Image (cartoon, rainbow, N blue to C red; front, side, top):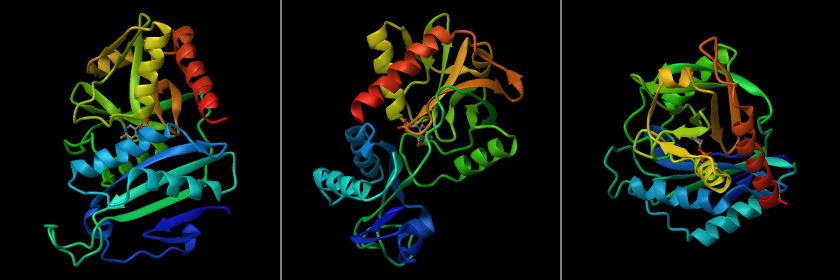
Length: 280
Ligand code: PLP
């Protein structure tokens, strides 16, 4: 199949799928999601993504009634049915279907499970990308992967309009993350990345990068960094399950980074090797 979608037991190509208007996703964005890429039909960092899906749900008081193992099997069955070497794998859980009412006790049927799989192109990890910056006006629960994404949608649109790849968010001087990825800097051979607090999503790729740094002897500082530090860094790169490790060459039209290819290449190449091993 070219793509496949799932909603509460119904399976069809995504273009044919219909969902009930009263699903709380439509009125409130009342749900969470997770996403990764599958290479050779193996979802990358699969367990970590499924674990984060359940964790996000718990954080907004949604109890997913499908056991994790069943969820994994469902996703693998969908992935197996779609053609392509690299696929985008998306799963969303909303609070369910019910008459519009802000408070949710008794208002919904129980969680709705949504998923789709379609072919995707992963970003070229050997290219460098221009980015823009924007004040981070998102709410204060960015650690939860909710489907409320309006500020991220607008930020990514602004990047595209500027001919750029990503928008790097900052709250005042503090850099947080990007519209749909985490951002890191290298300075004097040390990787600096924002700590996992409520201002960033704990990226699965970010965690993998920290693991690579530990294995390769690259020191890491998990502390907030400023816009000034970023502009002065030896390397700036952003990471996500589809962006992998994407190097940044310019921010707001000014050249940045591109001065420590050796350290960056250790991270990038090890990451590529790890994915190749995992998704054989
Ligand atoms: N930060 C945000 C806001 C994201 O939306 C994403 C991915 O969608 C990430 C970071 C990177 O997360 P991961 O590496 O788990 O894909």
